[in-house]
Amino acid sequence: MKAKKWIALLLAAVCACTVLAACGNKTEPTGSTEPTGAEDTLKFKTIGEALALDEGGSYMSATYEKAYVYAFENDGVYWRLAAELTPEQYTALSELDILSDDYEEKEKELLSSLAVTKCENLNEKKLTDDEMAALVGKTGKELLDGGWMTGSGYNLDTMEFFMEYPPFAYTVTFEKQEQLENTDDFDEEAAISGLKVVSVAFDGLGDSCTDMPEYYDDWSDDTDEAGVD
Image (cartoon, rainbow, N blue to C red):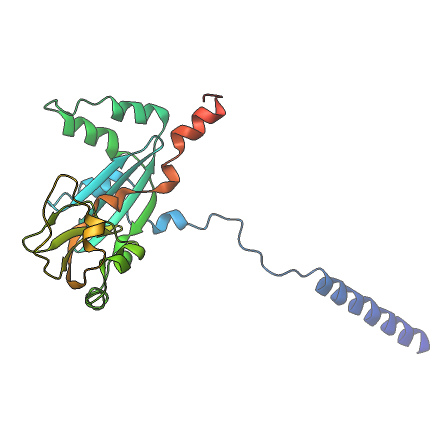
């Protein structure tokens, strides 16, 4: 009986050591090594899918050395897509003759198959009615200091200045100033700096909607690597 008891105790000890070893080797999850499927969350897989929605709405585009950017509105939603370009694709787009009759057809042919690498819903950056109303009474300087930009035009008769709060364009009406004159060297920022905002209205996509700083230095980076001053 004693021999059997010692064997039982020995087996129990072995099992306990096995359990402890297993616990000691346990690690916290560090994330799956399988593809996350993040690319499946893109609303548009190719630029062609966006171009096919052509509803006569507003859109803007820009071609960088290593990327094509397309911003547009569809069913009340403003999107910005980016597709990376190979050197051959960039050259092909750059060499298109904008004055040729088949320019749009050839451009669409080159763009349609481009895979979207970045897809942004710009509505998240659009000011709400309450946010626009909150700007009434602020000075032009306060707007400029807060990231607003002039340069899109103005109407001194109505005191409307067409400004941008990237990536969108707005019509900002300032208090009436009879002494302002439209001259060749008219300085919009100086003119509105001390004036108060009367109203702000949303216009749509601004010129800044295709600005993607991550692609600005493509050319300079390449030439620096090549040793070109």
